[in-house]
Length: 221
Image (cartoon, rainbow, N blue to C red; front, side, top):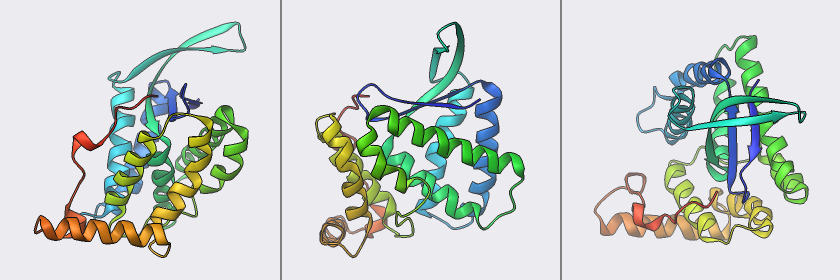
């Protein structure tokens, strides 16, 4: 069965399972992605594609191999991958939104519920206080329809990773995400204006720009 654990510093989640668990999740995401990918350059499609890529790499044994201890007396080797909380919370909202517009079978629904379940479990595992608020973003409440979703997501990631990996950073994540993903907040308006000015200097549209790799801090999981 799919498992989820907080990474050591609370930066993200480690999602683990055997080949069948991860392959099944991948097929569900692919089914949902087919609907999203019909729109060119849809940022929701980009979010799903990135997550789907990591799931596929995991069951192809190109990411993590971990020995998980069950009940202290039985250990099993699982495949898995690590994913930033910032990226995962957005992806979960996209998955739930898109799932409402296609026909999914019982296994697909089970995969989505299980993914949400292990995500909430991992949130609480790291910090119950922060999780009490962050759990409300699992599959809902984030604005994923902004054409600048990809750019805003990148900015949030940079800001998040620049902060010291502490419980305080984890507890501030709700505010960081909700304030910048909304185009109505002061933080959201300022960020979008900054992105538009950056795009004008590069003679590009705002949804065509991206942050440089050098702007992303090294991830301390």
